[in-house]
Every structure is written in structure tokens, then in C-alpha cells.
Length: 241
Image (cartoon, rainbow, N blue to C red; front, side):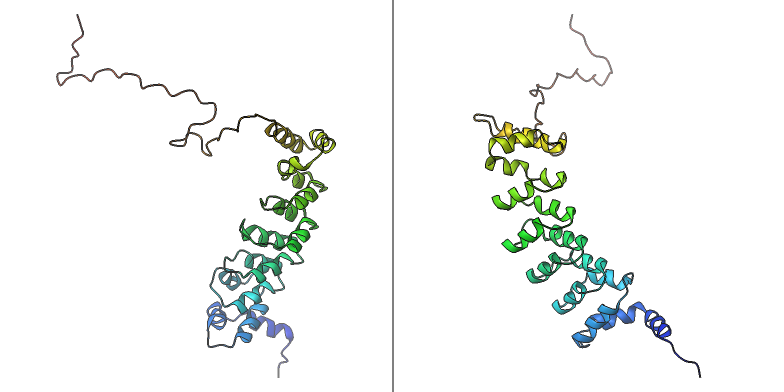
């Protein structure tokens, strides 16, 4: 009699056809706990996991994706548009920075964050997460000021314009002399925009030459040049005497 090892069992499980695993997860007659267990045991590269990322699922099964041991699977789950507020907040607290970034990015500008959420994201250990939260337009003055003191120039540059009205002259001078060229440029723009009586910056077409949009600095449109007459049927144009 041949002994069955743990490796043999794992290999047998992995050999279960994709269609069978899919049916076991998606069959509503299968108890939810059994379906959650199947998801938890799927390997990171399993094609079923990628399918499930774009499949409408009961909340309990989405919870299983969010709790999956693979950061890649949790990141895919963060792309879902049907996440509840509680699920997205769980992803915002994920131990992996790339998952927190995905949860924040795919939450979009309408993502509701409470004060504690923003406090945590502003102080996130990963620069990519702090850069993402710095782009949000709904940050409080306190959070903008905190991000302006970030150690990374790529984070600070995102908030220079919004912080400018709240800064004293010494802080503004420091930004204008910052070693980060992007911050110096943003500070110059903020300073110029804040000058009394300065005209509003003209809008620039997002696409050069877009129909119906005149680009800033383009010359005044001229009337069309007259076109030469078309030759008659005989092919000869009669010139004036």
C-alpha cells in the first residue's frame, strides 16, 4: 500500500479543474462558509481568483478576498466598485502599502474618509500612499500643512498651492528656495496667483486644437481667404479685360 503524503494531497487539490472550483464558489446552494474556505485556499496565481475579482459576489465572499493571505489578491479586491465602506476601510488599513494605495486610488474623489482615516494615511510609512492622499481636494488645512512638512518632495509638491494662503512670509520664502525644483515652481505659481488684481489664468484646451476651444495665446481668428473660381464645364476661365 502506497502512503499518501501532504504533498500528494496538495497536488490533487491543485489539479481540481477550474470549472469545478468555479462552480463550488459561485453555486448559491453551497454553504457560504464552504465557499469562503475555497477562496481562502486558492493559490495566488490561480486564474479563478482573477475571475472572481470581476464577478458579482455576496458580501461574505468579498470579505474572503479581502482577507486572503496574498497581497496581490487583496489589491485586486480593492479595485472592486461594489465594496462597502467598511470593506474599503479594512483595505485602507492593510499591512501592505500597495494594497492601501489601491484602496485609496480606486475609492476615487468621492471616497468618504473620517478624520482618523486621513490622519493615518497622511502619516503612512509608504510614500506612494502619502502622494495619493495628498492629491485629494477635500483635505483640511491641518492635513495640508502636515503633508507640506513631509520628508518627500514628491508629496510636498502636491499641496504647495493649497497651503500657500495659510503660510507666513518665512514659510513662503522657504518654499521659494526649496531644493526641490518642483516645489520652487509650485511656490512661484502660488505666489503669482495670490497677487491682488492678477487676472485669472486662461483655460488651456486639454487637447491641442480641440474643436470649439481656443488655446491660450492663439492669434485672433481671421476670415477665410477667398477661393479662386472653379473652371466652367469647358475648362477655361474667362479673365477680366
